[in-house]
Length: 109
Length: 126
Image (cartoon, rainbow over all chains, first blue to last red; front, top):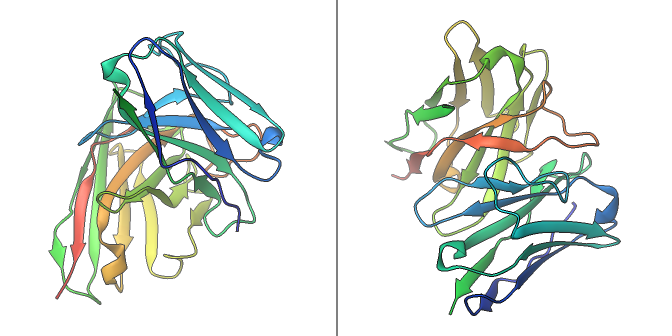
């Protein structure tokens, strides 16, 4: 089964840059989506196709994907960025073909 | 404005059945595949099932295969999840989610789930 590995938590001071990694075998060959989930709310798509921002998502949020690691970068972090972030890919041979990472809690100090 | 509103979640005993519904508005429902994703409170996201725009293709996670069925009524702009033989491990918040694709499968380039409902809570317990 395909596994996406994310760090459980990332802490960052306001105004600094947060980087959230998502590790998977040859993930660079896949379309990666990133979702943000604030407490008590539904997930929101923040990055699609590894690096594209949907309408309404600020340019401070960006994505990259290469080799075995996809990365979500949040620049000039604000208090409102505090949330859980999940990566997602499709892997047809997996137990769950839509595979989600375990999630990363971003804490703004 | 796109809206997805789930309903039907409740407390149910193990072995029983339950049907979830998702009413949508704000987009052309029969142009897109739809999915169910669940989340145990405090835990991560788990894809459950997906359905093609015209119900021509269905997909299920191994954990629910043979027990859950997904369907849609395009005339009613509604998505459903029929859950049979429920287990305690099915306890979760169930979200419906819209795909940008017409088909539930995610072959490259994989389309994202671009809108989600607020979820409906299913608790399986005796």
